[in-house]
Amino acid sequence: MNINTQNPYTIFRNEVDGKKYFKIGLSKKKQDGTYERGYVPIQFKKDVDIPNQTKIYLRNAWWTFYNTEVSINGAEHKKTIPYIFCNDFVTLEDRIEETRTDFDAIDEKKDNSFKTKEIELTDDDLPF
Image (cartoon, rainbow, N blue to C red):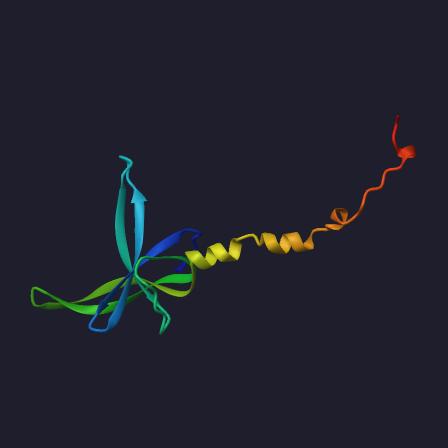
């Protein structure tokens, strides 16, 4: 199931025994106006390293899962663990740079020829 969103999400990083684990922070507004927060595991492509509490935009991500065996009262059962897999993302800082207007380039494109022209007035141009 693909994820389509325009919102930035915070990624939380945890390292245990040299292995990195990531969670994505989610929140929803409750009826009383307060927010409830939750966390969902998220995985990235191999060798992706994101610092803790980095805000990202998901460009290409989807819900997926894996199954694990658990023992409940001596009986073995499958437990489904859902998580998000992110194939492509952009950080908030990169997104700001992408959408920032380059005013220097706009100034270079402007026709500034009026600044270099000298204005000459003769007595014939004056109304008095």
